[in-house]
Length: 203
Image (cartoon, rainbow, N blue to C red):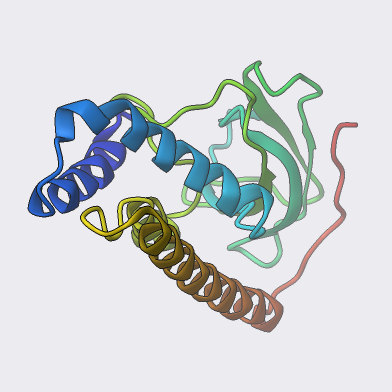
């Protein structure tokens, strides 16, 4: 999360503004705000609120860090089917460091074991995309995030009414594309097979 993705998104929108004869420097703050608002819209309104993790497990380790925007673990499975794992998500506020504590059943963790997590995320109140802060949503939504934020700058050289209509139309098209991608993702999640053991989380 060093800002590389956010800077790439910013530069794409800056190029659009530049190509339409707009002043990028004057719009710099608004571009970052558009990206931040688009990111929040995707998570809160369009249900892009899940991320996946692959945790490499180690025999001598029981606590593993997670990003602080993880609110809940909704599903998990171990790559090795006979590995019986239970865990607890740390009970902290969204601003604090997150981690999970893993315990094993009858079988032991060995090097090479992997735990897959599906997590629900939330946007902290002070979260902003910036030159040092990347999006928290999964990579498959990044291009659509860019398209949604860029829609704010559609038709810069048209009348205010035409500009607003074009912007809203483009945003609606992106919303539909996001919802389609969400449906595909849910279908894939339902199709997954494997043994899911007991599930525990912190309250």
